[in-house]
Image (spheres, rainbow, N blue to C red):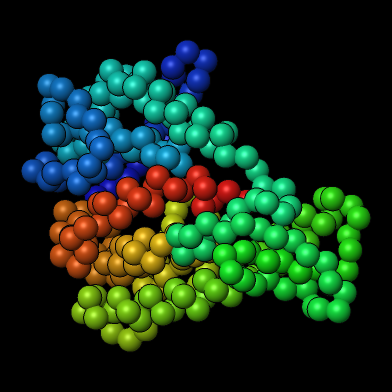
Length: 266
């Protein structure tokens, strides 16, 4: 069983870098593919910087706090560079203005947004011939109010589609998760730091933004959370189970991570 401890911090210049410590059995092996080993304790203390700004240190149970902190200190410049690299990627993603010509994602495909005003038709969102059409039932002169109205329509459309598609994909993945009996409860909500979660009672929470990703990415997140119904941690047993039901999960996760900034952009 893993034990996660939050809060440790380290300074790099004027910056404070917080990191999480995940404890694993002494003989366990970390499954993170891009982890950086700290030597001489290679394959024991590993450090990974995530696109959402989390720094995760995986260490064996017997590693002291001092040894872990020293491993982080030795790699603090590399960690700082990784954090700033991901931050720059986020800065390069321009915030949406919700005007014609921008793009919206749906199931991995990019659509061009086209905003129309037609008083004879109700306000709506439709996909038409590769266009993400939003119709306003009345003209809104104020740019901020207009953008807010368009965003609200799009958000509602995403939420409805997410409820439908996620239910379909959960049902499609259930044969792979033989330990799950019946359709698990799930809800859709906006999250900025995770694609999904699973409660101790087996209730799933799926990120609404996930509806923008391809179906194999949605399936990966769903299977990840279904595996937590059987193993509610990220132990060796969990990763073995996930690999068993989805051998290609690492490649799919990488694809999802690479587009995270675009999908999370609002």
